[in-house]
Amino acid sequence: MKIVTVENYEEMSALAAKIIGQSVQSNPTATLGLATGSTVLGTYANLRQAYASGQLSFKDIRTINLDEYVGLGCDHEHSYAYYMLSNLFDHIDIDRANTFIPRGDATDLEAECQRYGDLLAKLPRDIQLLGIGSDGHIAFNEPGSPFDSRTRVVQLATSTIKDNSRLFSRIEDVPTRAITVGIADIMCAKKLLLLASGLNKAKAVKAMLQGAVDTCCPASILQTHTDVTVILDKQAASLL
Picture 1 (cartoon, rainbow, N blue to C red):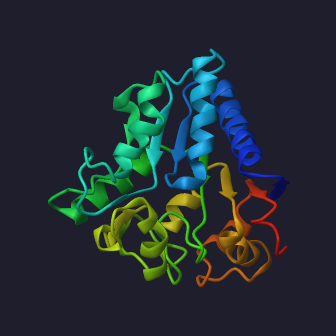
Picture 2 (cartoon, rainbow, N blue to C red):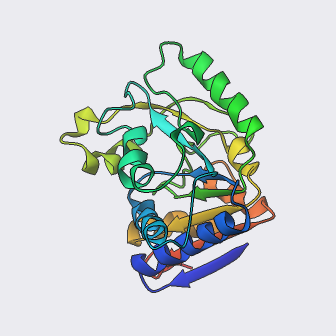
């Protein structure tokens, strides 16, 4: 595991985009595993800039996202499908047919999870971008999630709902369930790239990197992957 500590969020974002950009340049048909949330916004801004300046092309790249809220369609302003369009896909030359996100508004959620799990098996990710929750979750795999878990519907922890409520008008508006890829799905990626920024992530980062490999901190499983890069700003690394 490679751990890189940088000064701030801006440096973290720039380095993450550089690593993803190198994957795209070395393999123009790569499959990128993508994440959502505030942690990766700066990374996507840097990727947009790299495309605009002619440094990168995504025309033959495929992407597959980690999760989606149950009950939200792709046109809902708080869906992760909408997030990806607004923050990346609308600004680069990617073929929308090559972008994959779970359907949170599927009428048969079990069938949707099966469909998405089959898709993951067909599209091995060359690099998987990750954030970490304040409770140590990765994707929406909350504490207690089995390490062999696969794509499924999950109930979101109270702490996750609270953390995500800053993006909604009211905490009551935050969905309480999501479709998430499982921990075993994440670990199938060839390379993992995890980002963490801010003091509120420091305890989770310490547990991930220095604690036991235990389902009480789902991200701790990354200790067992053969190719992991963790980029931390100074605040997130403050307890190490």
